[in-house]
Length: 490
Image 1: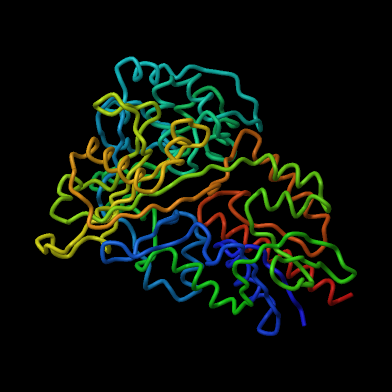
Image 2 (image 1 turned 90 degrees about the vertical axis):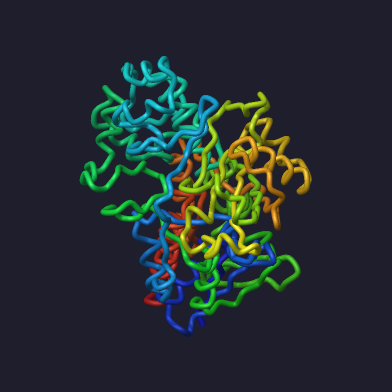
């Protein structure tokens, strides 16, 4: 009997297991080993305020096909929902303004759309659009590029909040080629103007009846395809459904400590369990685990994986009385710009808020007059390499909730005591795509290509979003299936 070992029970590992099941058929044995005691990885949900709310990734980019296609394949398409019309906000210059429309990860194609978010000097620097050196095919920190060409305010107020929301990192530490590949490609074609490069990445303006939508901003404007999607019961339903469809042997609370080659495949040593011998292995684990497991087999790939840094973050989830949530009306959330200060001069602890009950119509309270009705908010904390963020993440849960509530009051005026609160921590939860990330990924994939019956998948490779993870999972499963087919033929 063919046996495949999948190391990692997050969405990437479970998607690989599911695809292996469809490729290998019902007789294959698929074993999934997950170090945590629950499946799903960064896709998790909890009950709070009388409803189930995602406390990890809450949505996927609907403009990529992988997530929507897999949801349909699993029979979950009747559960697919999209954000409502509430707009995203940005906290910059001591004010909350609307997130500028039609930008590429904060880089506008038209300076006028950013006028509300910038000072006169910042807007003048944006309009200047200074030329600069550019090496086609090369890489540079997003922040360095934007600062040199469009000024510090564009980097700090527009680009950094959006990148921070995706990667829990800073624009100055993230590479353009991996995080905004379309913009890098546009500069390869014509490096003279960063504004022109951004315009080249944007779709044609919508019809006059449909207001413009910021690239990356949650919206469901009339006449426009939804930017984001999720599942009515929570995006955490996706890994659970994948696990069921994969019909795998699930081993939770176990860690694969070592891999060894055998004449017929691979042998995995597992904590608190018997070793597993398999014809093939898929590694769907964070970069440090990839480094550890490949060290004896592909040293170059292991070194490259070890160079990928990880960001830690935390999420404070609050359920407020619905009647107290009036100031949130019409706003899906607010991103906080780098270096911003509260009205009292203190630094912000949070980097972003998501007003879930405003953003997602299926989470909205049905009757705000009901004394038991609640509104749910998510407050995000943690930026990679930021000393203030590191100090905040060391606080205990009660202190972190207090700090988040204080920031919420400063941001919205809401001081109501929550009906319920929770803290969810994600240590090392997000890989940082630094300058040269694609070179590191190429080194990992090249090293693995020389190892028959081994494949890698996950957020450390070609994107941290759910669609990108699903794409790496499919590629890994097909690589394994092709290897097994060739082995059987021989």
